[in-house]
Length: 304
Length: 304
Image (cartoon, rainbow over all chains, first blue to last red; front, side, top):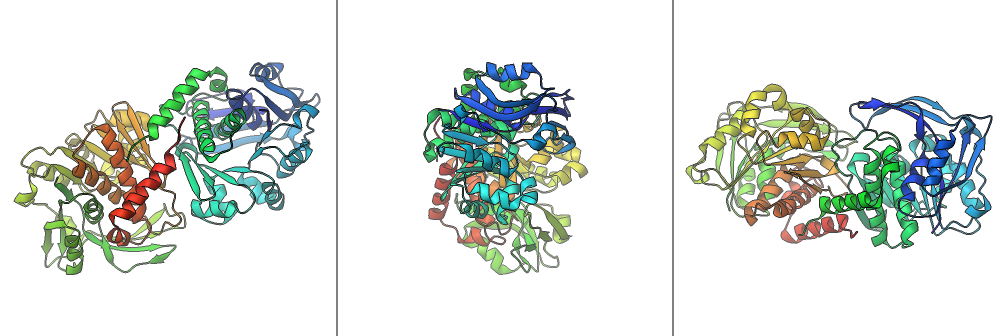
C-alpha cells in the first residue's frame, strides 16, 4: 500500500568521536523513505532541494524504489544544510550550522499520483506545511503519522495543536511529551496527549527505546544495545520510516500489529546509527533485517 | 534457600516534589531484605545501628520474616543518616546530609547461623567490608551478587577490583559500567567487566530499565512506566533484593531463570518508587506482585 512521506531531503555534515563527514546525503524525508523502502514497495517522497543537489542522491532514492517525482528541484536555490557535532556521550550534540535555503519557502504541492496514498508520514517540519499536505489528499488516508519537535512547541504552538487533531499517530521524544502535556509522568503525559487528537502516541527515548500508548495499553520496544554507535543522525526518522513502512506493507492497524511495527522501527533505527549518515540503510537486505528482529525477540523474551 | 544480605539499615529524610518525610526507615540492607522477603523465606541481614534506632523498625523487619540477629546495636552510637532532595526531574537529587555515625566503624561479624547461606547479596558498602563478609562464609555460596557505586571507583579502586573477582554477579548503573571499564558502549563495557571476575553483569538504568549480560547473551528488562513516581530512594536496592530473593527461592541459576529474576527485580523496584521510603514494600502481597509481573509481560510481548 502506498506510503507518502513528507520531509527534508538535505545535506548533512557530521562529526562524532568516531570521525567526520563531508557534506553527505541527509534529511528526515531521506531517512524515512529509505527505511520504509526496505519494508514496503510504494514509497513516495515530497520535498524540495536546490540545484546543488547531486543527481546521484536522487538516483540512490530511485534505486530503492522511492518515487521522487514529488521532490521539487529549484535550480537557483541551495539545498537545506545541517552541520552538527556529537560528543562522547553520543546523545548530546551541538548544531554547528543550519542553512534553511530552499526549505525557507517550501510549499509542498502533491503530484496527482500522491493524493490517494493510504498511509502518510509527516516528517518533522513546520506544522502549517504538515497541515497543507493533509489538506491536499483526495481522501482521508487510513493512517497519518506525524513527527514534530520542541522547536514548534516554542514557536508555532497553535498551528501545532491544530495539526495534531488531524493525525492518528504522534511521535515525539520524552522531553517533548512532557512539554506538550505539562505532565512529568509519561503515563500521565500520554493520557493527556491522547485527548488532543492522536489515537496513538509514540514516545521515543533514543538509546532507551520507545513507548507506544493506545487507550490504556502501553507497549515498550527497547533499543538494541550496540557494540558501536557511530552516528545517531537520522535514528528517529529511520524509526518513523520503519514503523510506517511496516504498517503500509501489512495494512493492519490492530494494536498487536502496531506493536510489531514498533519493533521493526527500533530494528531499522538500530542499523542507521551503526554507520555515518544513510550508509547502513543503503547496505541493508531482508536477511539482515530478519536477523535483527530475531535479536530483538531474544533481547526481551522471558516466561513468568 | 537462605539469602544473606549485607547492607545499611538506616534513617533517611527525603524530600521530593510530592512531599517530604521526617526521619524514616531506610538503608540498602533494609530495602534488599524487605524486597527479598516477599519472594523467599529465609532472609538474614548483617548490619549495624545505633541506640537511637527504634524497636518498631526492627520489629517491622522481623514481621517480614527477616532474621535480624546479624544487626548489631551499638547503644552509645547513632544510626547512619542520609537526607536528600529530589528535583522535578526525579532522577536528579541533591544529598543534603550524610552522617556515617556507627557505620564509620562497621566491621560485620557474621553469626554462626549465617555462615552457610547459599545466596549472598552484598549491598553497596566499602569493598573491604564486602570482602570480609565473603571471607567469613564457611563454604563458597552458590551465588554472590555485589552492588557498588562510582564513589568506590574513585576512592577504593584496588580494593574494589579485588572483591569483584570474588563475586558472580555485579550490579552497577550505566555510568558506573562506563567508568569501571573505560568503554562508552555498554556492550563493550560489559564484555570487559565480564573478564574482571563476575560471570554476570547487571546494568541498572533507573527509569530506563536494566540489562543483564552473560557471555554473549543480553537480556533487557524495562522499568514499568508509572502513573506516579513518588520517591526513587531504594529502587536500586529493591531491585537487587528482588533479583536475589527470586534466585534464592528458585535455586535455579540458568540464564533463563536469571532473566525471570531480572523481571522480578524490576517489578519489585516499580513498587518501591510509588510511595515514600519502604512504605509500599510493607504493603505488598503476592497477588499485587503477580499482577505487576503480568503487566511486565504485556509491556514487552510481541510476535514477529
